[in-house]
Image 1 (cartoon, rainbow, N blue to C red):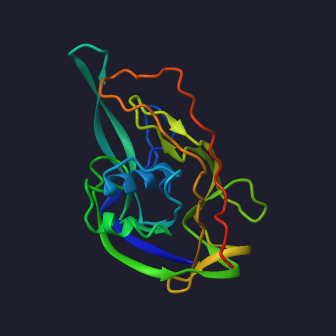
Image 2 (image 1 turned 90 degrees about the vertical axis):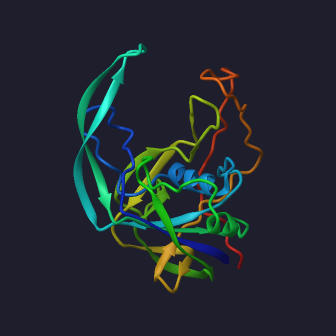
Length: 241
């Protein structure tokens, strides 16, 4: 299968764990799919969701550290109370983004907006864009990636995460389901895709069929409060054999 591999790097990154609302803020070891689609949206300059693009990724970093950050708690008035939180972050993050949507190559060559690996301060840079051929194999090794759960061959941290968010404000999560965060090498058997140059497996999350449209609005209140978010499932993209 022909895909583009986009190598994105940064100095630090942080991906909020949705289980923690206040106090110490640990980071997920890798970005959720919603963060990846956010990066693609910034590069394209238009809202991009799993209805438009299938993708896979491998993400790793050099380690973790903890920083202190000032937060301002607003009561809805012009006054805000300051507080200090401890936030965990990842050092020297590297993202290898895979997608068969070849038209995205131009978007990453000339991004419309700054690319971020997490928060608005976690700026990222595109190091390279390479057209490659993923091999069809019966066995591979998955590492530093996100795969749908359950799967009897997988083990590791399981987390409920959204695939993407709506374009309206306030944002609403879509396609939330359980994923297995693969932080160790796992031998996997089946119809899989493999990047022979990097020597790791690539799991492509397939596009969701149908149309995904939400009312775009410019005020702070949603246009359609009765809007129903479509259900989304993450499965392996079908292989061309």
